[in-house]
Length: 302
Image 1 (cartoon, one colour):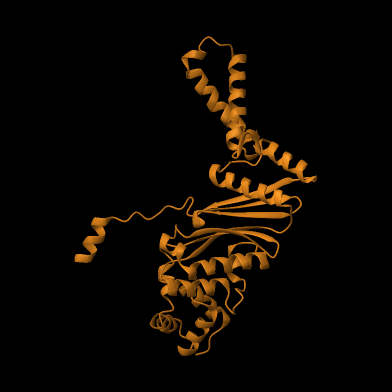
Image 2 (cartoon, one colour; image 1 turned 90 degrees about the vertical axis):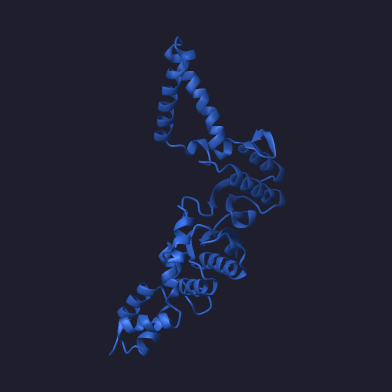
């Protein structure tokens, strides 16, 4: 029975196995999809698909500069032990290299991109799933092609930050980038600058603070104009907490990050502009599996 490219694609989607292995399975099964699935299962290749439904909320966040391109990725696995696995970490670095070289538009494009060893990224990932025995997924990535990028990886990949600047590659500027990246890792600012805070966010915050002020007995006899000033003052203080440029600099809280950047620019005699940054924390926002011990024991004794 003959088979088509669409059959190969269909088998790949069903099993998560690489294209070449799917083609081989269809040859062995004489084009029969069901028999091809059986053949892949017998060879242990379809195990990757079985693991694909399991929750992957551990893994690592990783940032690096590769051939002048700043790259940050998050790759998830099922357990924190995998973060220390050399095979897993080599895959993560390989994914980052693909992002730097291929500039994929999204995760689908990344998975379809060549890994550099005859496999696509997806095929390489499926191989690693079989070797490591856990579900593995690339969750997200970002890249900065221009400017000066400075990476920072915290606690072995729990958090990664990539800072991008328009600035000369002077030692003082690189140190600045690392310091700012460490601050972003620690404080996780919501916005880069107070000018980035949208009107809707401000309006909502004012609404909440106004309601709080009216509930406070101390403000019962204060005129609206005074309450408005209290709210504005509170917002200004709040911006120093959630906006990176207005935050006190971690190494010298007498100045803001913005003021420290200006001081470094003066020191190196050149403009230094923080263009942007990306912060990934592994497993952020993923609902982790909560195993029921009693249920697991019950399964074992059945």
